[in-house]
Every structure is written in C-alpha cells, then in structure tokens.
Length: 184
Image (cartoon, rainbow, N blue to C red):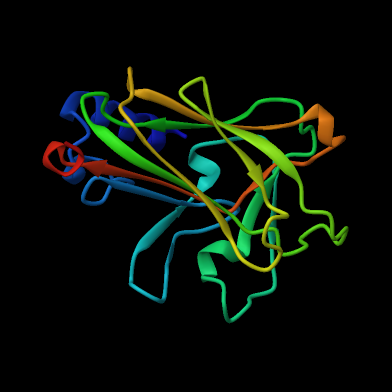
C-alpha cells in the first residue's frame, strides 16, 4: 500500500509523465479486471495490470479460455451488491483527453446463463447501459472520449432495478491519452 501511495504522489508531482508512473505506459493505462498478478497479453505484447490497485470491493473469477476471446477477457471482477456503486479510481492528468474503453465478457462465469444488464458511469455521468446478453459468446466493449475535470477519475458499475438483481461485472478497462491533433 505504501508503494502505491508513493507512486500516486509521483504522478501528482510529475504531471503523470509515462516515465514516472509504472501503470501508464506511453500514456496508456490497461487494467485486466480480476487479474491476480502482472501479465502480458500474448497477441501483441501489451502489458496489463491487475485491478486490485484501483478497486477494493467485488470478487474475481477466471473463465475458461475460448479461441475467439483474448486472454485479457478471461478474468473478471463482479459485484454481488449490484445496486451499490462499485467504482474504479484512476489517477490521470486532467489536462488531457483520453479514450476510455471498458470490456465485458460474460462467458457464463456464474453458471446461470443469464447475462446481466447494468449501468456504467465515468466521472459521475452515465456512460452507457451494458447489455452483456446482446452477444453471448463475444465480448462487449464501450468506448468514450473524455477530458477529466480533475486527477481522480471514477469509472463505476451499478445494477439496474428494472432488471432485478443484476450483478455488474467487468473484464478490462483502458484509458489512452489522445493527442489534441487526433481529436480535433
């Protein structure tokens, strides 16, 4: 925990430069939700980090690998108390735009064959309603370009009452810095 606090202080002091924050590589933060250790994706040699640095609640699950699904999508974090806000806290510089990408692969991890529908928010604003049942054997992704208002960005998952006791889950979360020239 002391290491994480020291790293977060470095981010504040150094303006989140890639060389000073080990989670941001070339202004990219890649989180493998549910991962228990640091890993490298086999397809394109990208480094993904475990989500335990960014969130406390929830339980993790490993899903049987499928040839059509990236290894990053075979772990997930789920939240049994679906109506609670379950938030990832990210430390990014607030002077830049980012593209955020959240990935969801149900893979029948709970054995119920009932993929949930739940809400996703970013920075306190609704981002999307995730319908993981739209494609049962294919990951679902949500993307959004966002310019943070402060250095603490929250990405939250919350169940929807109209869908009963939906259990939100997430497989991956990415934040990639966008050069101003790329977004104008």
